[in-house]
Length: 242
Ligand SMILES: C[S@@+](CC[C@H](N)C(=O)[O-])C[C@H]1O[C@@H](n2cnc3c(N)ncnc32)[C@H](O)[C@@H]1O
Image (tube, rainbow, N blue to C red; front, side, top):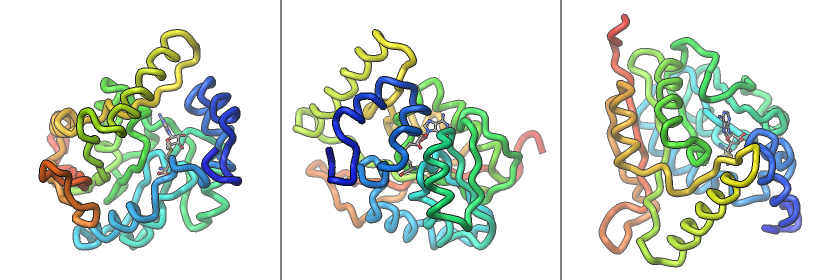
């Protein structure tokens, strides 16, 4: 559908009619030929923005998929880098491409880590978490970070209301809601459920102190707002439990 190497429309439809985990298992070998993989342009911009925030030792890529974000961690972390994802198929691809990384199969809503990472990143996966699950996800990442650790991810601005991209994403989410009302298992993927103000509130509720950094490479919208921000959420040096 996207290129000769990418999945056909029929394959994508079959994948979307299963669960998220199974869908990615089916897509895994062709995933890197789809626009769902985070672009190198965005990954490079994130690596450049993170470099001055270090030094970092250990790094975690949450929902790593085939491992697009692992080189970002490798470029800014001196120590072990780890990717976690619940799709075995995606992890197989990541293992082939990134033999230097530790790859672990787990649900991001139940991460099997103590406070062991200095930096956690995540790319392109937040649409798979319903708003109520976002709190759990942030709590899991918070637990996996050492005191003073950083959780960073890019957050593109939504398209202007009424623009063609706005209606495309609106239409996609509407189709997914109908699909999920009629079909089991659900395939949770929504483009419009990860909104800046909600995200900031939920990160704050989890105990993070949040800073927003403009990613200048992507320029500004007509209303003057940045097209893309880097969300930098820091865990306190001393937690209340410590
Ligand atoms: C669009 S892909 C993004 C992959 C990669 N981060 C990238 O930017 O190319 C979303 C990934 O999130 C994973 N995922 C979704 N929900 C998850 C969950 N609850 N636990 C672990 N992985 C999850 C999927 O298996 C898939 O590999």
